[in-house]
Length: 264
Image (cartoon, rainbow, N blue to C red):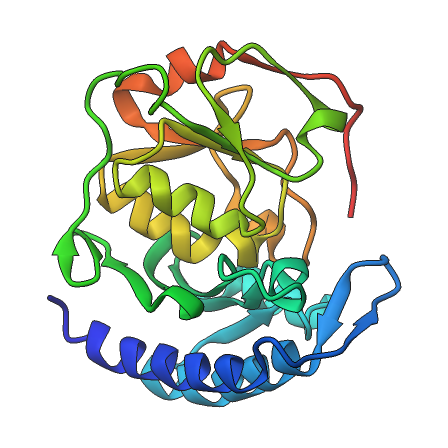
């Protein structure tokens, strides 16, 4: 495993301790976009904003601190960019449901290079560095290579999928509250696909892991992701579908966007 992973995993462990101190006893506030934020979100992001640039110097794009146009432009031009979601799935975190994640992604030259993601309440960790494979709790992770039995071939979707997509997928659909976790389940070979429209911090870490596990992440129209364009916190659109490379088209054919383009 890469020399980059030990310090990344150590930073993730520190962030996990902070999140778990608040878990099941946290109050929330509403942000201007009506999404939830907690003290844990802010403390985890503040911790990682200090720790991560000491591992690899670079720009830092976090969910709770994003918004400065000048910083976004600098991030677009930077070789190294950290993209962090301190608590992905704040709603389930507030509700005491253990499927929230902490997501750390490192992009190099506008492309996911490394990612580590924790599922703190379950004690699980996903990790990858480009060219060195993907890992789940230290064991190699790989995507499904062939379609599986229909009742196991799950498609994970966003919580608002019923408002945005017409889904003709023949297997089960589920939403666990964390965008990143959905794509990681594809990387681990226990899901056929994951579909959502989120932000760079939702995807960067999971994308590095998914790609190293043999999957791909593309817009639903099959266009590649322009990661630099998302540095300002813009929502990815068309939605992003993650699936095994050889099954991506098959999964994409079962989903259609029915809601007009989303901005911001």
